[in-house]
Length: 100
Image (cartoon, rainbow, N blue to C red; front, top):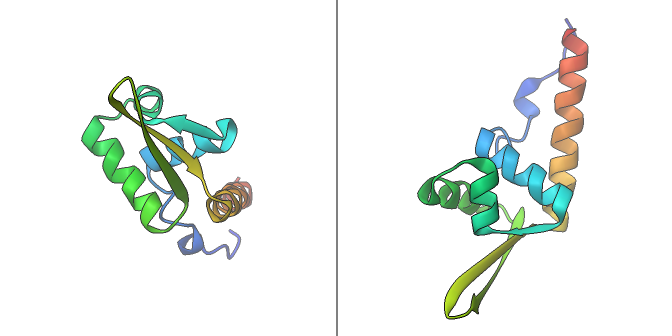
């Protein structure tokens, strides 16, 4: 086996919900909370917690507004978030390829 250090994988993305949300945001550019909730199958509270973790490290930015008197929240990856996600995917790919 290769001497690949799996501990260097960014733990922010190493969660199923955060990985799914980051993948969706990377692909689509931005998405609102309800769409992310549907796509990930997460509950409101669970998704909020995971998105907050990505916000704390400044991997996502949030735009809040109102639409027909209802709150509307849109998420997108920051430039740092995009770069970190790309690095994570490359490292994960390298790790997987080194073990097969």
